[in-house]
Image (tube, rainbow, N blue to C red; front, side, top):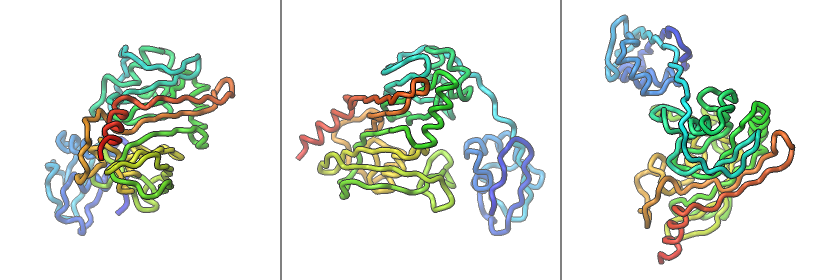
Length: 316
């Protein structure tokens, strides 16, 4: 079964007899991977999906051999509005801005997170970034997950944006993290080289995928300290896939502490409450786009993770 384009316009699909009994929304999600399950359900509810000319419900079962038409409208363009908010600025000049992001802050707008983003705060702090990069991601060249804290570099000029994107593509930007994970990691160090892509039946989540069904992702780790049921790791990225560290460590059998998305059900309880993930971007290094000088920045371990480590060190 070959996936169809999800570009705006009328998409015509034929239901294979082998798909008999499938839910309409799930079948469409497999055929139109460019559309999230939530958006497909919204299109169905709006009457933009017809099966043999008739509007059907998302949970409707297919019989096979039907003709399905999906009217995909162009995505609504929402203007990013500046929203003044405190920023923890580590370094700033005319070209780049290095921030220490707290947990709980979304980097740029997305489904369910239209306001109170780091991008909106950046726009208020430095209005000139409005013309750098994408309109909804001004100056953003890489990101951190909402509940991950630590260092993030932002481009304030087109020169800086193009140069930093090129450095990321060449894998010459150093991004190092500290993570507390569930379980005792046996190997002192290792490399996880496994493709990552979206889950077939849950487009919001990422997963390790078979060869040819995801993008190459490489994560390196080194054990810094072991505890009874947890391990402190130093982690570095060679690639920058969505949720890469969280997905790779979960696939290794050692999900990041505090990760309710990829952590699974059988996890040792945390000895103390934790705000966000036990994942912190501790070091960032790159070549300054204008001066050509090497720039290195470090962020201390945040108090929320230090508290967790203190409890683990004092637990027999």
